[in-house]
Length: 124
Image (cartoon, rainbow, N blue to C red; front, side, top):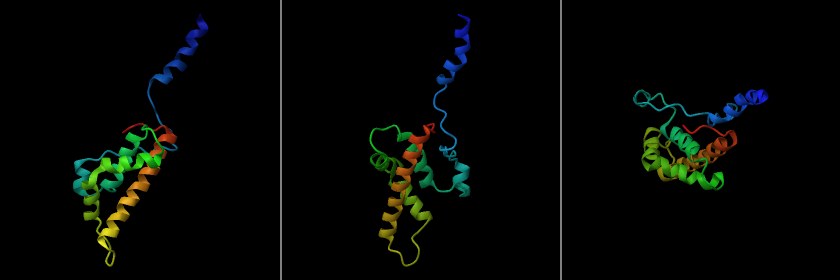
């Protein structure tokens, strides 16, 4: 009977939920009103994609199938705000630039969903 008590710590380590692989996971930093007002956050769009990708990583389907839901969760307002803060360079068509931003958000979403799945990352 005594040897079973020695296994208790091992059994209990599985009760704490996911911890994620620190070599893979990069939990997004919290977005605060102060960081938004100061303009110190790296970008609302990148933050939004990162956060929603981790949240939706458990959804069925491939990362490429989940990624559009990530971008949709961020919404047009976030993408439009990003474009307003980071306008198209001179000589670049605004519509093409907007499509490029959306395409980049989609590819970032594929990466972040894959990252979250591979690292068993915590949901922020």
